[in-house]
Each structure stands twice: as structure tokens, then as C-alpha cells.
Amino acid sequence: MLSIGGGIGTYSLSSTVDAKNVADYLWNNFLGGKSFSRPLGDAVLDGVDFDIELGSTRYWDDLARYLKGYSKLERPVYLTAAPQCPFPDRFLGNALETGLFDYVWVQFYNNPQCQYSSGDINRLVNSWNRWTTSIRAGRIFLGLPAAPQAAGSGYIPPKVLTSEILPVIQKSPKYGGVMLWSKYFDDKNGYSLAILQSV
Image (cartoon, rainbow, N blue to C red; front, top):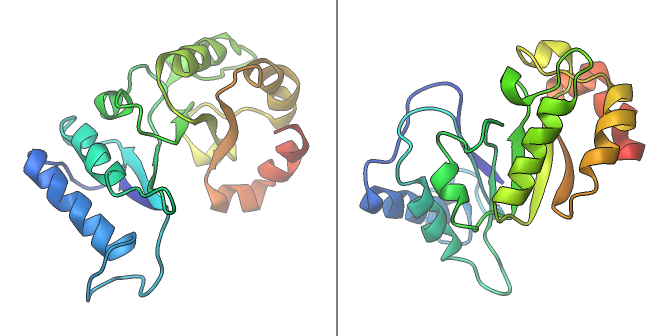
């Protein structure tokens, strides 16, 4: 997957035409198209991850439609998204409403109104239920920081996650697993190993 966006810098789409041009560029340079300037050489990525946290809220739905339009039965273009947990996501709400996203990794951290906090799982579970019943997506993942230092807030001790939260959210047919931010902190903290058998 090629992730676009992020929490640093400036970026936006200026129009539907701009969204089409960006889709064409991504297709030809990273996905199944052809270009003389492919940054990853012959590698063909499976899709695009939308991590839109800045800039304009417009035209991301158009970009999703154009990218998904390149899908073929034998070679689908996967779309994923990493929205913040307040629902609907300010930047990706319209794009997620298209129903074109295969996987959605909701960031249940850095947002006190919808994350775990000091033994209280209710805000997180209520937000999870809202996400899983409100958007059409293949699978939804619980996005968490892999260590207390990985985010400003929202860290869940592994034992709390495996004993109190996962048994509740795994009841959803859209449950896909757990997404951790970031690999660096996971390697230092061993979070994924601590939860692996319960995911």
C-alpha cells in the first residue's frame, strides 16, 4: 500500500480534475499502470491508503472513485483509510461514504472523546460501534498507539485490550484486527507480541 497524506506538511486536492490527475499519477507510477519514472521500479503496489489529516476536506471521494475505477477482477485496487475516531472524520467523511474502502484503520488515540482513558472503555466502545454500524467498508481495524510515547493519549495496556476491549469489539462482523502506530514503538515495546494470540 502507498500511504498518502499524513500529519505533517501541506496538501489538498483543488478540484475533481485534480483528483483525476492524482489518480492517474498514482496508477501509472505506483500501481498497475506504466510510466518511465516509477519511483519503486517494477514494483506494483496493491492500493492506496488515505491518511488525510490536513488541508481541504474536498475531492477525496473523487480520488477514491477514480482509483477504484482502475480495479479489475484479476487485479483489484485496494483502498484503505486511517481516519481519526471522532465520527464522521472531518477530512475523510465524504470519501468513506462512497463505500469503496476495503479496510479502515480508525485511529482511536489523540482524541479523548472516543478513546480509552484511565480504565474507562465506554467512549472507545461507543465510538467503535458507531464506526462499524455507520460506514460501508470491508473490515474495520482498531488503531492504537504501540507505546505510551507513540501518541499524545489513548494508550491501552495490553492486558486491558485483550481482556476487556477485544472481547466486546470482536463481536462486530466488520472487525478486522488491530492496527498499531508505529512499528518503531512496537519493536521497542513488544505490543504486538503481547496481544497477538487475542487478535
